Amino acid sequence: FVSSGDELAPVKPDIPLDAWVPYWALDAALPEAAERVPSMREVSPFWFSAAAVDQIVVDPNASIELTQQFLESVRDLDVAVVPSIVDTLPAGEMAAILADPLTRAQHVDAIRRFVIDGGFDGVDIDYEQFAFADGSDTWATTRPNWVAFIADLAAALHGESRTLTVSIPPVYDAGQTSASGYWVYDYGSIVEHVDRIRIMAYDYSVARPGPIAPLDWVESAVAGAIEATGAPDKLVLGLPAYGRNWPVNTVGICPAEMEQGRTSVSARSVDELIERRNATPTPVDATGEWSFQYELELTNGESTCVQTRQVHYVDGDGIARRMDLARQYRLDGVALWAFGFDDAAVWEAILPTVADPRATTTTE
Image 1: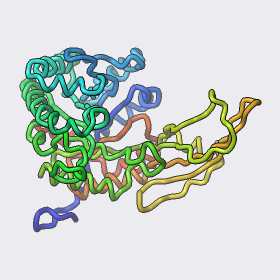
Image 2: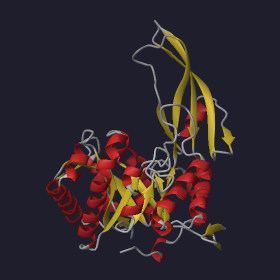
Image 3: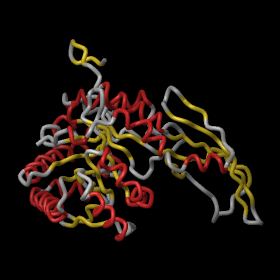
Image 4: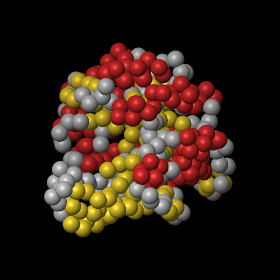
């Protein structure tokens, strides 16, 4: 049970599952789409970007053949197709677009036309430059323009019987302080306009080795979002089916062409790495993750180095524990980052508590 005001609210017995599908995971996702996608409420193709005020384009690195094949395959699977649009403009440009009512209206119309022309059920807005490129000194100016954009876009999409989801970094309270998280996205002001807010509760450690989404931090992000919105029924918790692999020490001189920095692993790929490097993973109960180290020798015959590398990742059990948090707080759903990163163990862990998507309704 979790507290709801002065009363105890029962834990949800099951919860809807959504998923992002990045273009670089399509080789793995496509063969399993017919089996896995019917378990999902919404699926978000992740290969569209805002390239200008009036241009929504396909990522140039995405395979046209595979992306079209995926879209064609899910049309017959009774799932809502809600593509993600990311902001790939240089720092500050999207903020400038939203600051001008004229260009903001042009951008809203470009997204509306993209959704209608594509025959999509809605759209997921994933504009992360505000948080990670523009600088927090811009947030006070950007925040009201972002809210106006979301209100206008929601009205345009709802008028076409389409939905609006936003994927945004976490907040930890309802304030606008340095301890509040990414308050530029103003959870509290946008919640009345959107259908869903996906909490990007992962990437806790990026520059330095550490957990991907420690459970206590995930819970603080959930609690903060609820405090900011008062609407757990519009919140969706992001689930990381991945990990990262960092160099933590180097002995010798690495060949420049062979030196490896931080890389990524997934629930699907990590077992092969463990076997190849003869590593021994250790569970970290406090974070709900696994970790291991191994030695990597790099040589070109002239220079040689040995890197000590450290890996942190979330497996199927970790996904299930985060789903349990979402059920305890009675959230609207969970969203897998990402379909194609998963393996059989992930599905064995999550399917027992995935709600039947045909028994859920979309908020209008």
